Image (cartoon, rainbow, N blue to C red; front, top):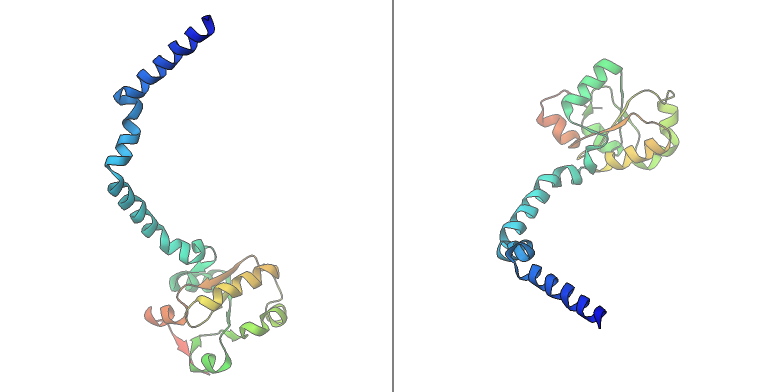
Length: 162
């Protein structure tokens, strides 16, 4: 009988807590403000989207960063476009290694794996995949030109034609 009385007492204390405003205030807040919470989550997602879409920015450089890396650390620029795209215009001093040949030809183009490698394509999409290949080959300082040749031209940087 004593156990039943204790259970009833703890039950009544628990139900009293749930009836108080503090016991339900967090639930009420979410129910009453769900639209504001949804807007906050959505705007946070939109703010994070550029870094998520570019792979978190890991290994991507803007044209200014590429020029600095070329000048300061003598980075090697590899254009992973097809030969026709390469001939139409590429970064000055870039070497053409089509994406399909990257596994075989990158080690012969860049012997020192500590040398920074900048991979370039027309839009930046293929070069991001090329960065993954280069890193698998041991080139830890492999970077992609964010935005590709489009960003390079938009920054009014010199383009060479073959």
